[in-house]
Image (cartoon, rainbow, N blue to C red; front, side):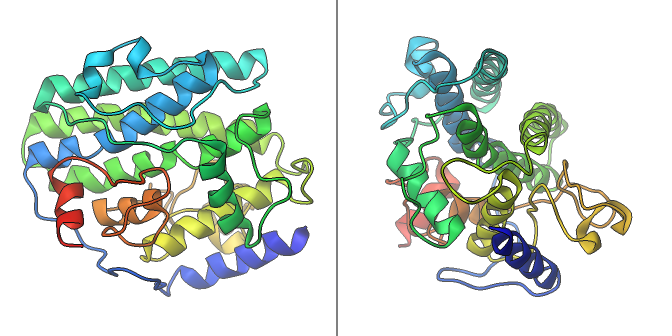
Length: 304
């Protein structure tokens, strides 16, 4: 389905300078919040990554390893062990344990929040991939069925946390907060780079049984996240037109970055629009059917 790639690439090129608008707020600036609230907000993503990676690799989640970290929050819906090749399984297992460490680091520094309810079921991912593809996939996309599907589903997660950390650091006031978030960002960036590299090795392969390549799926997911966030291009797939490549000289895009190869940044409202899958920080859905927790996420839901 080459048309999907070219359509996504064309729209990404246009969106570099034209912010897009869907339902919800179009505010792209920072939120006013304390360091504590800014550092606690990423727990919404760290819990998500921990549950998805641990379940995918081991068949069980955070409650089997550090149950107290959940703060009394409910276990996720639908998370399950994935059918992974041995190398990928070890990588994902390591990622899962790293997320446990991230949770510990944040909770120790500023205190925790109750784990929100997550929907990590195949149905939740199928809805996301239907939106990205622009039509209902048949059969429904299942992230747990094989290694490629799981890596594509993983593509949809750590990068959101990565750009969120980049967007948070400039607004932190204390050295300890900045040092903590910078150290978390380093590992999130590494996870995203590994996932993107593994997928790039298969960029031109068709994702069975769909007539869509791995690269086309990543471009479609990135385009969808840009659309939901409503603040222009801050997300790019594995293959891009030259105007978006490094120094305008490459169509490969293993690391998503701006024209000076700096990481993109996102604010908390943008992240909620993406993770909810609704394009609105006021309307929960997607991976967080009841919305996120912590003061920042709940402040938007209280206004809904």
